[in-house]
Structure formats: C-alpha cells, structure tokens
Image (tube, rainbow, N blue to C red; front, side, top):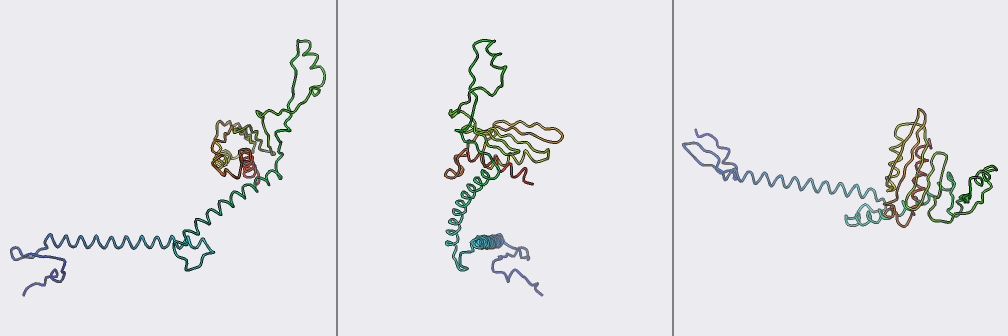
Length: 245
C-alpha cells in the first residue's frame, strides 16, 4: 500500500523523490512564504482602514451639525472651521474674564494717577533737621508722568507691579503644598518667563516674590490681550485658583 501524500493536494508545494522518500523543495517553501507575507499585508491594510473609519466616526460625532451621510472631505472641512471658531470664542472669553476680574476683585491704578514725592535736597545739615521736625506729609506732591514707573494692581493676597515688559508679582498665602507649582503653571500658561523667584515661609504662611518678563506674550492672542492685560489676567487667575476655596 502506498502511503497518502498530503502535499499532492497543495498546488503551491513542490516535492521531489530522493531515495524513495518525498520531501519539500525550496521552491515550495518560497511560495508558502510569499503567501504568508501577502496575507499579512492584507490584514495590516484591513486594520489601517478600520482605524481610519473609527477616527472619522469619532470626529463626526464631535460635529453635531453635520448630517449622518456626510463624506470624509466634508467632515475634515467642517472640523477645521469649527476649530477656528473655537479659537475666536476663546479669545473673546479671555477678554470677558479679564474685565470681570477688573471690576470684581481689583483696584486698578492708571499710570497718570501714580503719585510720587518730589523732595528737594537740603542745602545743609541744619536745613535737613529743620525740615524733619514737622509732619512728613507737607512735601509738595506731583504727578509723575514718566513712562519708567510702576503700575500696580492688587487684591487681598496678590500684588503685581508692572513696568513695560516686566512685572514683580507678590503672593501671600497660607502654607500648603502645591502653591508654587500652581503659580508657575499659570505663568507658563500665559508665556510669562520667570527671571527670578524668592520664597520665604514660616509655620503658617508663605510669601512668593517673582520677577517675570513677557517675552512670548506678543505671539499669544496678539489681537486680544496687551502685555499689561496679560499680567493682570495671570495675577487674577492666581487669586482665584489659590484663594477661591
């Protein structure tokens, strides 16, 4: 009885007889490898298309104004338009938030209202002693209109003094973990660079004195916020995040 040869049923497998035995040839093995590679390619392509369908389906779900039969090109176009509208809405909300912070929790000093003492230098030691015998509030007061002066904005726990592209931010808060990380996160969010920072604390409270520079503010919302407004918005967010609870 001749044994059954299963290889004869496979057209892709070539055999040869050596010493009365049949064995697979290299050509048959090569054909099997090509078939396996082709099947892998088909499976990979099928998975890729499945992933793309799922992504388009998720994007379509975020755009409720589209019809259920919208094609892929329409979905992409509507998504781009929707993102642009969201960016404009964000800028508008940032401006509204700034106005609310100004009116609700701040005292805003205009540059023209900053008052400084102008003291004339005494001509002699006797003159100095004579001038300091009376009350100290009799010196003439004038308005300093120089651009090299501070504009100050403050709430009960946050004080910010601004001059050009730089500002000094002072924060006083109860001692608790995460306060400094929150402050730095807000500054980074508004692209305010930390030039220097000093922290002092005791058992109950911490004080933070931070010098920041508005190096990257002009690139963020250039049509919406000025440097001064960005400083104030950052300080207002610190006040809300750290002390609203």
